[in-house]
Structure formats: structure tokens, C-alpha cells
Length: 103
Image 1 (spheres, rainbow, N blue to C red):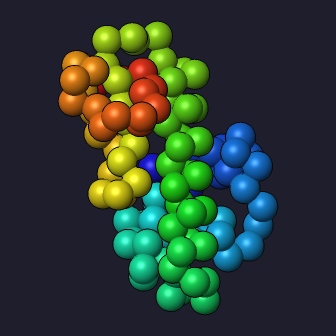
Image 2: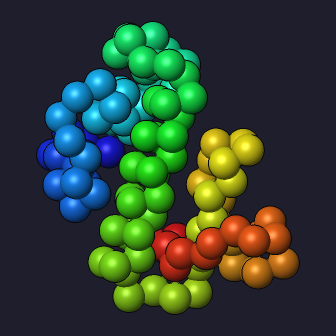
């Protein structure tokens, strides 16, 4: 993700300027890990992780809103901190929310 894309996502998700937004930028733009982003911004890991989780969910929703494809789905697994892509509902953890994604 570029800085410009992150700025647009931050506006859509109403991320306020501050350490949480900076932690999200470090993870989503610079590729930092959540623990490294938490340390760099002076945040508690749990709070940084929650902010990044919300930003990733907002990103998945933005992709859904801009996508006309409905054959590929994504789901976020907070235990593994990853966004998965699948074509089959059987691959999804029970209770996870599905979002249509590009391939």
C-alpha cells in the first residue's frame, strides 16, 4: 500500500492523527510488524494490534466496495493476524466475516 492509498483509507475509516494511525501506517505501508510499530510509537502492543486490526478490516471493506468480482472471498483471522483468500466457504473459520476480494 502506498502513502496516498493509506491516507485515503485513513479518511474513509476516520482514523485520527496520533500514535494509532502512525502504527497502522508503519504496518500497512512500511511493512513493519505490529510489535515494532507499537514500540516505535510508544503504544501498548494490544492497543496497536487493535488499531491495525480495525484498519485492515476497513481496507477489506474498501476493496469490497470497489470490486465488481464476487467469486473470490477474503476473511481475516485475528489469531494469525492475516487476511486469507479463498474460493470456497469451507476454508473459512466458523464465525468469520467474508468479504469479496480481487484475485
